[in-house]
Length: 101
Image (cartoon, rainbow, N blue to C red; front, side, top):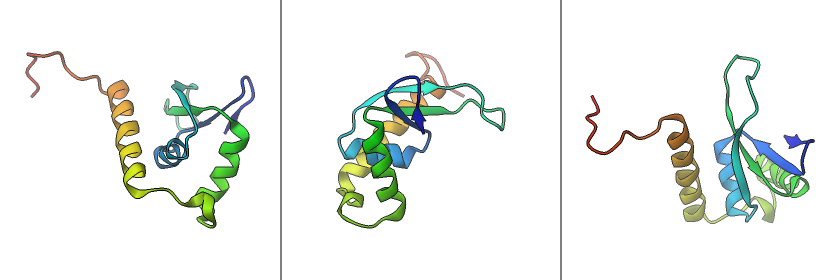
């Protein structure tokens, strides 16, 4: 999804965001664009270079060509990093010394 207010690209798909990150597209921030149709507030990964992101989106979903290839280890590390960023926002970790039941 291209953000028309600024020159960015936003996606809520964790795995596609990890793919973009591995491809070297800078992640600017995680953003909440308000409630979706289901009444939820999903977080979006916001990247630079919307034109390149749209081209890579086609490659990612079609799975054809050189543009769809990434290193598996880098991809899994990117998924893990983005997932931990999401969970740190969604479920903040308790302070040290706090008992978790």
